[in-house]
Image (tube, rainbow, N blue to C red; front, side, top):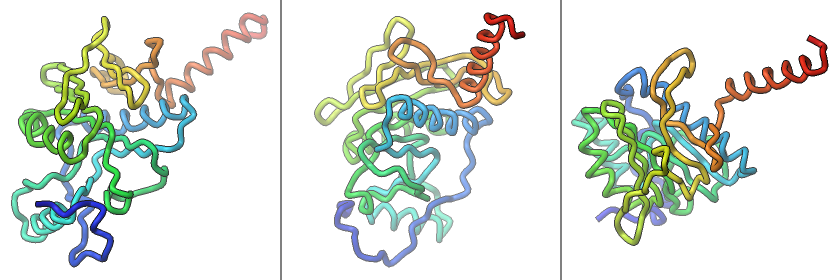
Length: 233
């Protein structure tokens, strides 16, 4: 049985691994993960929240046993079978400071409240089974969102008791996140010069939570329109 996160307060007899050199599956993944993490931060800023942390492609340790197994796999160059972390996650009610990894026993036992996984042919089965079980049983993550680029399928799950139940999409196919206070949905367009279907966040009124670049462009357009209205352009 895994050692409880809150019990691991003494120095460990091994060093926790914070990176394994594992590359993301596709070009889309390399853009989507930081995009989503940044959008979560912008959504929180719009809501006036600073009591949160969001990470992407980061190790999450929930027990000493898990940490020991990861370290052993890396040291002995064994197949990577032990859980390492979600693609993107969010934790509410915590201090927002820099972290190299999320270590539950250094965070008062806290684990992610919201998890996002961007599936690929090589990870879909694990994301839908083993990881789903960890997020429900160990993390007790309130919400779990999955997107499969290959099929364009976006799913949302909300914890009810010990098990996840599907989040019903709205008329636009978007999923309401009670934890984040936004809708999770798909948007086709250009991000950093790349045109794809992206997992984006939407405000309750249906408008996009903008990227920093989009917000800047919108402000420039607003100022230009104002100047034109005053006949100064």
